[in-house]
Length: 129
Image 1 (cartoon, rainbow, N blue to C red):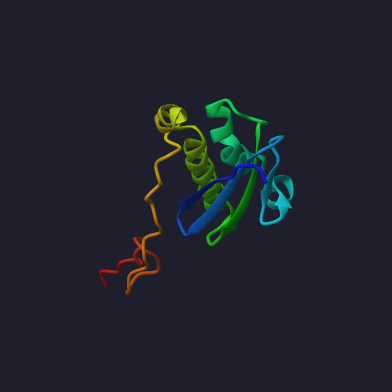
Image 2 (image 1 turned 90 degrees about the vertical axis):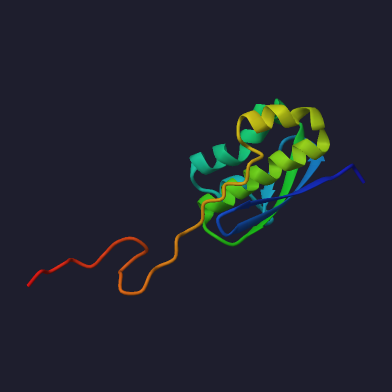
């Protein structure tokens, strides 16, 4: 079997396990094509970004297993995983990918809802009388 490059990407509540295999540039997410899994073009652009930055678009197939969170978080988690897998494949790409911010895990999470309020920061309307 061909050489595989494995990596994990994370964003919000999403976890993506990525396997890169030399191939034609086909990306499979949870046994579906990316067009089928991500209906929005912007999400597909986000997850393919590491290939364009590294200059290896169309040279590797990605098999991705992603769970948790929503589609936006999942697309960013896949992008993070692909970038990490590309560094495993070729450590020379690390500088290029890091400069674009693709290797940094986005630490932003949803703030919890507080009691006595409708949302995390929103307050009920104040009434003086």
